[in-house]
Image 1: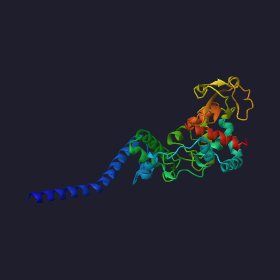
Image 2: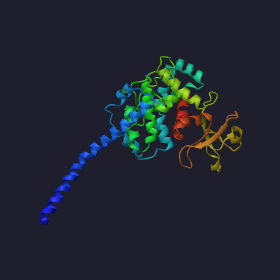
Image 3: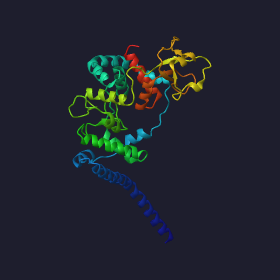
Image 4: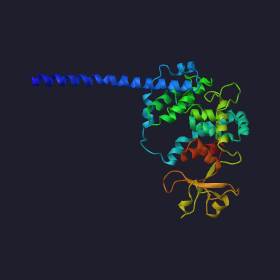
Length: 329
């Protein structure tokens, strides 16, 4: 009798465990559906049209690949030289020069209006999407919904999702055509929805801020971002320099600003050993990478502005480097 009861209890336990396997998948789906319903209610309360929400959200499912990419740890760290060779290859320089020539008239016009040199607009374009060739390919709405539901940075991505839905509701793009990176950056310059709302421009006056396919809108939006972030049209970004042996490492960093004459007095020269320019710009020394002998750059205001776009030293130096090489330097 006892043995029979043990067998019965064991069978019940196995049945219960098996029953839980498919239920967990259904529970996850139900959880996302419940979350999405609450998100829809919030979007409605914030003035987004119900028809827009139906088209964008009905049948929406999370993207497993987005979670994998968000949590993925890089297998190795690129050195600065490896990064520059990958991001600013000769092929990209040549293509950037061709794109600058192709759109010269429009870029000069936009550059004058916003106070941003065309070579920097083209450099950002090249590094962000290889001049519009690569936009990420993810549905921005699905990607943002996935990240907002995931919980790791839900508050940030929920806000970005609401903004993306508002952009669709305003008629700038459809949900189907709103493509971008796995993190929700979109268009030819990879704007997050919050950056779109703050900086995107309808330059051609057609009633839409089309940063995906309209070249004028895309260029003007990038230039407007830089201009509103403090860009100076009368300055470049910085330059590679040499520091003397025994140079005080404490003087390297963005917190230290000195006029050009002071850096000259301290023995800092251009990379080729010639004297620094005589123009008295406030400048800082930065080192690319963690190595004590890594390359050093003397950077100006526009470098700091580029960091507002992407807070990576490698990225900011790459933008400046590509811009100068496109310009033939």
